[in-house]
Length: 255
Image (tube, rainbow, N blue to C red; front, top):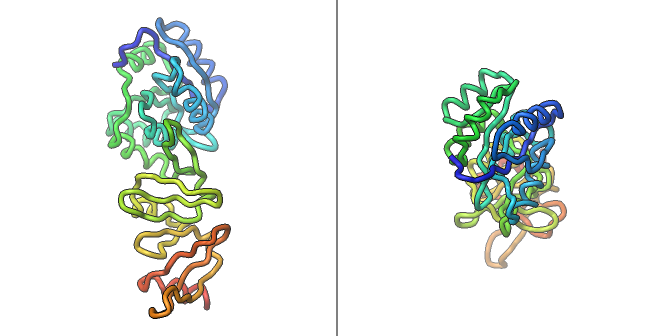
């Protein structure tokens, strides 16, 4: 339970009546304050970023699952990158599949229409999610629209559509866009599985976005070594070496 004299709460739901309902219910619960409202996951993350270093940062997020632009499960994943993520209580219309996932992972949720007594109980036992709980919920939102980077205590969102390549280096992944590079701590194999229709593994340590591959060319990086196939990429000067194991991709793309 969160031991606070007053709970600062953010409501995230794409439907105004649902947000109004929660605001009205919270008005009947002592020691709660609605800090802000958001209409989707992206707007929620922007709000949380703005309040992170203030005395009135969010303690709890009442988070709808189904929202446009970015749903609640993905937003919850990104929120975990914060040094002190808020507690999350999911809200949802009746959905057997979702309810089973919540029950199995011991994540608290509220069924719509939300009742006052149930909301009070959820607020009393609200706590931050642990990674295993979120992992169990990813089946409700199988593919992210963004990658998130924790930079100076803020969450930076990088659209998947902007990523040119993902390169594994030690325990980090370099995320390359046309503008700059970012570092994230994720598994390259997991990223390959999640975005298999968007990225191609060119090398054991590198995935390239299909949309940014211009073509392939044989180059000699060392006059004493044999030429190697490399992938040419849009918007960046660097190339990616294609491993021998993956050179069948070149044949497929040059037939």
